[in-house]
Picture 1 (cartoon, rainbow, N blue to C red):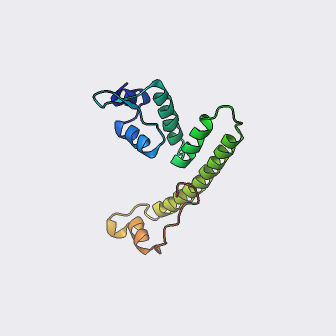
Picture 2 (picture 1 turned 120 degrees about the horizontal axis):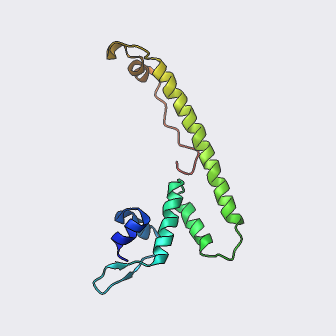
Picture 3 (picture 1 turned 180 degrees about the vertical axis):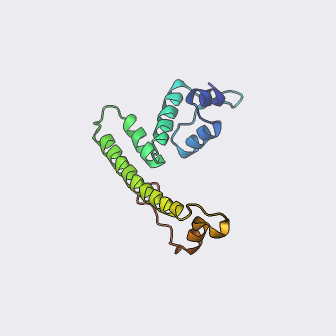
Length: 143
């Protein structure tokens, strides 16, 4: 199948497919005599796997590891469990960070209950008067 057909079947864009090929996540397909990419069902299966991993916010490195595990079907699934447990930990950290962010936003929102103009808006005044903090890097693998 051609790249457009693969993209439709996997519900992703052609640029995404080219990117995953360039990143080494998706193997390069054979080429036709006219130099068109010629994908097989194996490409579709692997692309769906990659897209599903990305929808779970997995990094390319995590996906590479899972693909290596998938390419060795006779090995034990302990490393897969460990990778997923680590990813769950990253999600937990991100949830904590998002809850803290939400709390700050709610507090800021409460500063402006019924202002009649921007000059009296507690949100605008709060944003202008809050000490500027250096953005903290996330403690997750997503940075």
